Length: 380
Image (cartoon, rainbow, N blue to C red):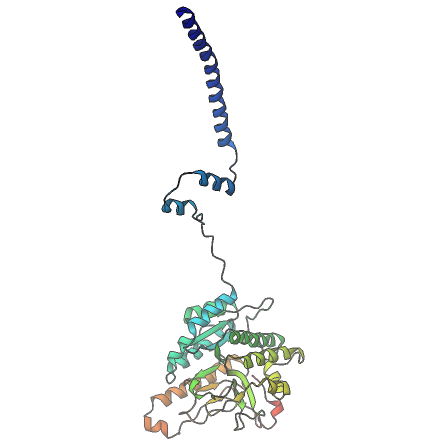
């Protein structure tokens, strides 16, 4: 009996060995193929439902580990998007604005910005003016072509490159030519955009000399204030002849609507200077209904070659208006600077005496009877 039982155990043991060895071999082969398949197959996102099922059946983990398990994947930042023209404008305006969101602005192209040209004279007037050098911190030069922008960056802090698709503003733009009109109307629409962004502005042509800070002398009740070729003595008189080369606008709904209407009026008056369109619409009922307060600036403080300021102790700006031709303008602008230097270097008692007078116009001489017929006055 004992030998029979022993035989049975040995037989069972022998049978187990016969089956276990092949099964182990098959298992090893299957595992190898599985690992090979995973190593060579493209990776696929693991379903979130599977992840949650596994996590729910797993033993609890510490809070720190749980936070790490569900943390957002690290995202590598891509290259920043290029700065748009509007983004650049926002940045430049913010950097140049005063505490009450006012900026001083001028515009120029390559023809007006070359070394020794009008831009240099313009900036010099700020440096030698009475308390005007600090205003350069709030001046934005709007360059309408690449060369003007490069020149601005070389001489000034706040520069903005303004481009209008399909228009080339480089080179000399002769007064009242189609190219000149396109540039003036584009400038007007650009200033509307500045108002919409919440900034007040003082716009000055680059051929305006700054001898005193004009901000304290603007009318407190004026939304839009503009210099004159011919001032009739009353700042509310719509018969004054404005010159859009120097103006001040407060940012509010009235001025924004006014600038929109002014620009839209170009369609009614094709091939007409934006300044002459202003001379038409200022009388319209629609402008009165807007409630915009228009004020005309006295030539006593805001003069020009058309009508010079008579008092050096009051003058804020002088404009080379009523003058066509870059060389003529530069000659008379330099003469203005010389006149101002003589005034500023004289003893204080002589300055009060009002014995100083401008030596201009020299190159920009006006023909006899220039103001006898208003309709013939050029609007520069």
